[in-house]
Image 1 (tube, rainbow over the protein chains, first blue to last red):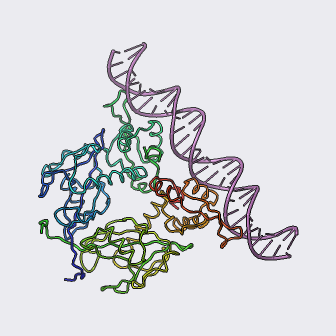
Image 2 (cartoon, each protein chain N blue to C red; image 1 turned 30 degrees about the vertical axis):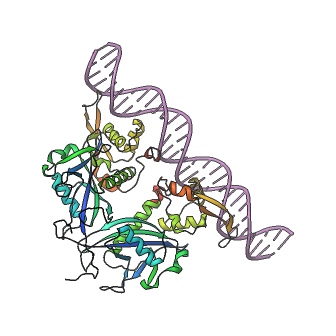
Amino acid sequence: MKRYSHENRFSFAVDCIIFGYDGEDLKLLVIERGIEPLRGHWSLVGGFIGAHESADDAATRVLKDLTGLDGIYMEQLYAFSEVERDSVERTISVAYFALIDIQKYTAQLSEDYHPAWFPINDLPGLIFDHDDIVELAKEKLRYKAALHPLLFELLPQKFTMPQLQRLYEAVYDTEFDKGNFNRKMLSTHLLLKLKDKDKGSSKKGAFYYALDQERYSQGFKSFLNFVSSQNANK
Amino acid sequence: MKRYSHENRFSFAVDCIIFGYDGEDLKLLVIERGIEPLRGHWSLVGGFIGAHESADDAATRVLKDLTGLDGIYMEQLYAFSEVERDSVERTISVAYFALIDIQKYTAQLSEDYHPAWFPINDLPGLIFDHDDIVELAKEKLRYKAALHPLLFELLPQKFTMPQLQRLYEAVYDTEFDKGNFNRKMLSTHLLLKLKDKDKGSSKKGAFYYALDQERYSQGFKSFLNFVSSQNANK
DNA sequence: AAAATAATTGTCTAATTAACAAATAATAAT
DNA sequence: ATTATTATTTGTTAATTAGACAATTATTTT
């Protein structure tokens, strides 16, 4: 078997930062670590990369194992490689962040991992450098969601304008003018107004919207100011 | 020595995408690969990660070895981990992209690597998945430079407004209105107008500008539309 | 039927962007 | 020396977008 001549071979892992939104807070899914050392401590979901899978494959597998679901929005965040980051052995970890609709997926969470959702502003301490990883993921989520329509991944297929606004307000920890927010979202032409209303949370009721899937997949990359720099810096 | 119980340990490398600007074209620095297989083929500069260094350390080292310089602008791009990406053995590579001022650094390039600058739109084929890596780097450069003042890293300490404009035009492969470009750049308050002019390339001469280092390091993260979405999509 | 509530639509002002035009400073040509 | 030339710099205006705030609408509760 061919090999390069150097002697350094390291353990290689993925860690997933899983965001969810319950209509109130932005949340993060963490688990109780199942292996020693630090068994039982809070940790990001992760796993080692096998000989026959890429990091993407591994992250997809880990997400599937935990939630039972495919097709979750996921993207690579960053490779963490500090020498001492894992106390067991030298391990490089590629972090992925994922967005899921809590309502839909909660039921299917595997109990093997003892998973738990925590509000993003009230997280327990995590093992190793996972706190840093989460911090970077929060930054990137804010950064990217200001320019691309990715927060829709956190909502159910049908959602109302006030729900969408609350989500943006949770992510950016600020408040928006409802009139201007409404217009801005509609100006993307990414939303389809449905015929029925959500009567649950107000007297008047709010119309449901759904993503125009075609425009969504096309327009995802084109960037648009979903959040003004003014609000982004608050 | 402690170890995790799995059996997968991989080779782990960094590759550097080094951009430069010669006043005319945006260019990429590549080398002739020094080891078998594919010795002599064009390749990104890279190296394996040692037992006592992080990926950042390794990338810094590789850049220093090639150019003789520290303090080069550099950031992590992406981790490439496809199983078969390296024909020798399973190797994960973390790619970094770097920006340097060609004029300043050319002289110090180490000849050991047989380095060469190619215009970004006229690159030779590169080994392994390096073509993909470069493509992603170009995308990210465009993306980031539209929002953050990072192209200054490609210019000498003193530069004129037309030079700066030509650089932006090279990166985005488009043209800007000189009047509006001027104003937009000045509106950042990142530039200091110097007293002397560059007389080389025009009769009237163009005033030199330099970065206001303090504001630059502060304002780097705050995002500003250096390139309108209209021009970015051309 | 009136009041209350929250969603939706409307209006206006300010700020920004984009297109284009004019003025300016230096050199080269007559 | 004067004029022409060239590229930089500054100026003007129209069009678009963002932001603040007000009015209207649909529904439920009193």
